[in-house]
Length: 78
Image (cartoon, rainbow, N blue to C red; front, side, top):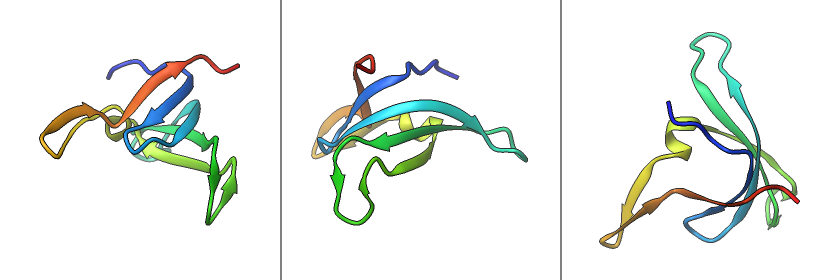
């Protein structure tokens, strides 16, 4: 599967997150991206941790006739 850089990413809806690592499911060995919010999440606050299947994190999506990455790499962590 495609490599993933650690660092800062922008979600296609505009929110900024920090990828902090890759985790594997203990039973299936599926790879998951571990990331945290770098914005104030109304429900969970700033810095909430999330998991998303790596395949979903890296996927190309189409919305309103436009094609783009779900998450776009912005830069290394400061």
